[in-house]
Length: 168
Picture 1: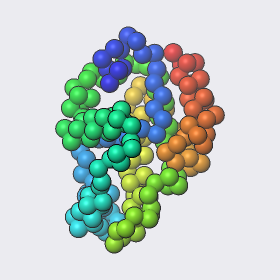
Picture 2 (picture 1 turned 45 degrees about the horizontal axis):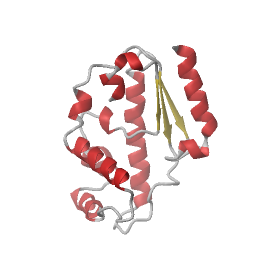
Picture 3 (picture 1 turned 45 degrees about the vertical axis):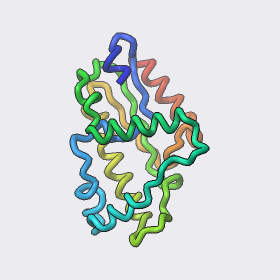
C-alpha cells in the first residue's frame, strides 16, 4: 500500500513470508485448496467453525490490525487492486515452505497436515507468480523456514535487503 500511495518514497521492497491474498484475483479456497485433496464444503465449514474471537489478552493494536486485514480480505483487497502497478523497482519475495509453525493438529475430520501442505503450495505458487510478474522481481522459497523467516534465517533477510539495495 505504501509503495502504491507514495511511489517516490520507495526504492525497493522485501516481502518476508507475506500473505498472498493481495496477489490473487479470486480467493476460492474450495477450488484451490480443498478440492485438489478430496475435500469439500463440509470440511471448509469445519475449519470456519474453529475460528474464535481474539483472546482478551491480545494487545489492541494487534486485534485492530487483524480486523483491518480481515475487512480488506473480505472486500477482495479493493484498496490494493485500485493502486497503480509498482514502479520498476527491485522486489524480493521470501516464502517459507516448512509447515513447522502451522497448525497441523486441529480437531477436524480430515488430515490437517495434508491441508497445510496444499495451502502452502497454493500460497507459494501465487507469490511466485506475483514476483515473476514484476520487471525486477525475485522469488525465493526456503524449505528451512516456516512463517518466522526472520527468526530461523536472518541471513536470508539480510541477503534480500542487500540484493534490493544493490539493484537500485
